[in-house]
Length: 222
Image (cartoon, rainbow, N blue to C red; front, side):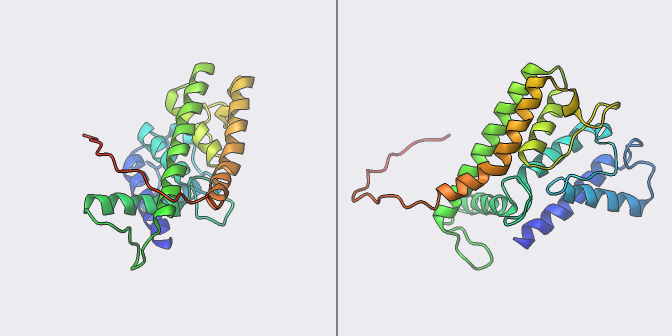
């Protein structure tokens, strides 16, 4: 899925540059070349290592939410990066594109993607979104911090990224959470590290095949 990685890198860099170009607290006072380097650096590290060269607490809300999306996606499979993985994101994107074009098979570079793989990708993405939403809501009830900042912390923990927005005085917002709030972040880290792995391993279990199929039901969705 090098194509997906490349699209995320280029798209993330351009998006961060557009959002932060005139922000004097982040990229505003930098030369053009340095802006591009910093934008691409954070586009990559939001999905992988979690390093930063600017104060993330000074980013605009749109930029913070963009980084939340990148941390949710994560890196490629086979590495130490967290998230749902670029392959999952790519498969879901192709599934949506195929559905809109009213085609039967999901195809990617002249290859057909098995429907079981599509089901696993959708299940992993939906479960991850559910966990992100639930833990963000729980954290928002425990700590009086901005909702987007708390979502950023949860997404960083689930993606095992290490990013934190800070609050101006402390580089890590998680350091200012209540003890129970910190415990929530710790639980998110374990879920983010082992959750996708368990979902992937569980999908390889052999299931007993039914000798019958139930009739289809016509359900209206709109």
